[in-house]
Image 1: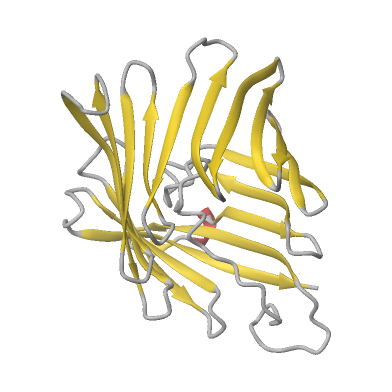
Image 2 (image 1 turned 90 degrees about the vertical axis):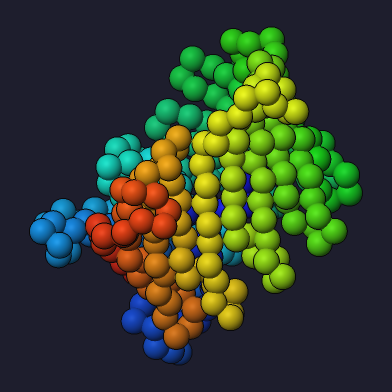
Length: 279
């Protein structure tokens, strides 16, 4: 089960009837492709020679995702973290995702009563992980991950507030716990995500904060600022400042880096530019 927010997932793509340059055309049918390019800074200026594809999504006619490319480390902006890349191809049946595959993996999805019941992950050598989901109503309350090389499953227990927002993911990794907590504003927007390891159990004797992410929104509920620390570091923070088109699509993300904490001095290190293509 994915967390509510990652740097990739907070970029909400609204399917609208606008053209590539954001003006109305009579024959536009649907959004077919979104491409985002990272342009890093050199000597304090954007360096077009180092421009690279940061993310790409292709859509089917029914707006489901057929293909996705993204750089390694979906919680980060900058190329120092984005050392590898992923390609994902999706197969659907009756509107449900049943298979996802790439160069080195294959995921099979099964459903029960309209809910995702399990995900089986395969590598070239065969099955290596199975995730099984349990529900209370429409909410996932428990997920167990079983690896072929281990007899001890990793168990996630999920907790929600009265508005139905996911507030806690308690992960039992046998020898220790990892707890992820989400805080929300009055509009049910995630404003903070904190991930902490507890040793030797959930009640902790020793704890270690892995990561902290903070988000700010405008009056329309759109992300304006996202701040994230690099894992296990409270010195290196990346910040993305979001810009939108008149129709509410992400047009640009200005990327900054602080080397002295979340409240430190940020220097711009790049810009991510979005392009939209329609059929």
